[in-house]
Image (cartoon, rainbow, N blue to C red; front, side, top):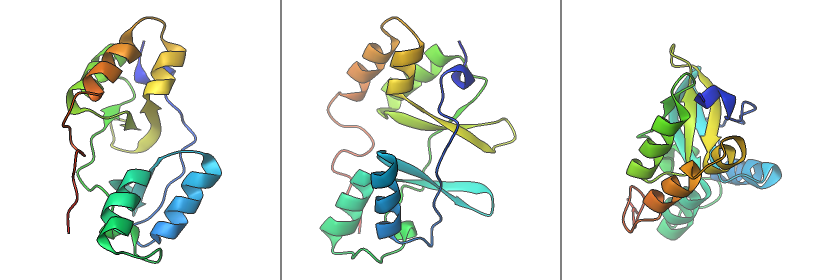
Length: 146
């Protein structure tokens, strides 16, 4: 099974200039915890509800602070034509629950989340990924930057 067979294709975007309030409101409306950040039709970052809490509010930034101040600029991603088992193992290795999905021309075409994998691919792939993701440490463990 390929990533494109399981990913979510309707993706809400925000820009680096949007306020973290706008991003938080979009997440609340859509009942999601992550938004891709795009500028000039290019993926430049990701902002999560955790980014808003730890890099925004915890660091004294108000709701009108721009997304660029709290987003994660080091974007991990996968390609729509990759094998879902390969991507699931990678998600476990890098300890992320969601990845933006790009076409080979680097255009954003979707998001793949553990929930997408669990629903679309029977077996223990999502459980294996969650086990790896849940290891202590990881990319965002205590990652508060000034």
